[in-house]
Amino acid sequence: MTRRHVHSGSPYEARVGYCRAVVQPPFVFVAGTVGRDPETGDLPADVAGQCANALRIIAAALEEAGASFADVVRVTYYAPERADFEACWPQLSAAFGAHPPASTMVVAGLIDPAMRIEIEVTAMLRG
Image (cartoon, rainbow, N blue to C red; front, side, top):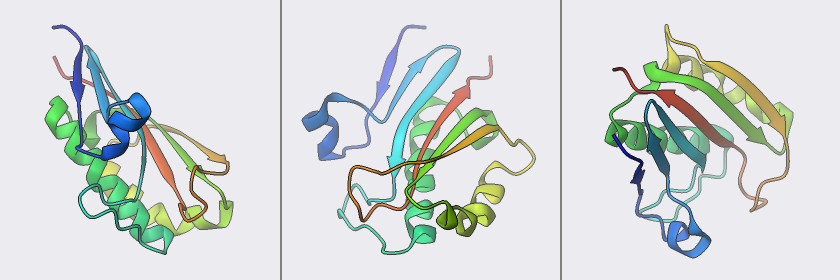
């Protein structure tokens, strides 16, 4: 299987020059994903709402690539405030369930000060 690109429809993909995910078997690389709804442009004010949106966007990209959260082997979280991260733990635990990936959390500024979390994942396709 050759490389395949997964697009979310976000206008930023064309403007910035990236896609939501790249499928390069046996891996799926999902770009850093924030909680801005790609259809409406809405960005919840709270980190939990942004995390929920980001997880939905990631889940859709993984599904289109032929994977799921159970296939994620690595996740990196970026947040401008370390105190915000704990509010996301219940959602992250629910998403990854019995298949927790290796993870890293980095405290870093994001491209928009209103953004509270960005999540990127790498999954392995079952073969």
